[in-house]
Image (cartoon, rainbow, N blue to C red; front, top):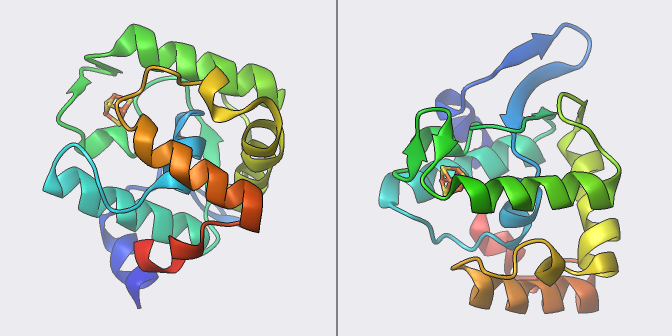
Length: 160
Ligand code: SF4
């Protein structure tokens, strides 16, 4: 199964005996993951992001992390514990936390986080308020429209 294959390559940042594996996730990646359609900064990055998504959809928990996370770990733009676009991505993270009423360090299932981001941002404030100057804008605009209209992106099945 795709999800099982992904689990081998996704680092777990912890394990809760009762609740299973936990991985670190920057707040704004709650949007990137929902709009992901198999494109990214490098082949390795994109493959890994697909694995992370499959891993999360299989029921993993997340720790909200205001620094480099599991997705950043395979990104060519990562710089130390930050990003070459640090100022920009930190502002995206802050906006997601603020709109969703969350704080760094909180833990929850991916499903809960995904639905919160969907309700408060995609169906609420709007993605453009969070990341208006992101290079992936065109893809995300289209996906956001699909999710608003259908509840999920119809092409979602092809992305995992
Ligand atoms: S390193 Fe920067 S560009 Fe790469 S995934 Fe992390 S936040 Fe995004």
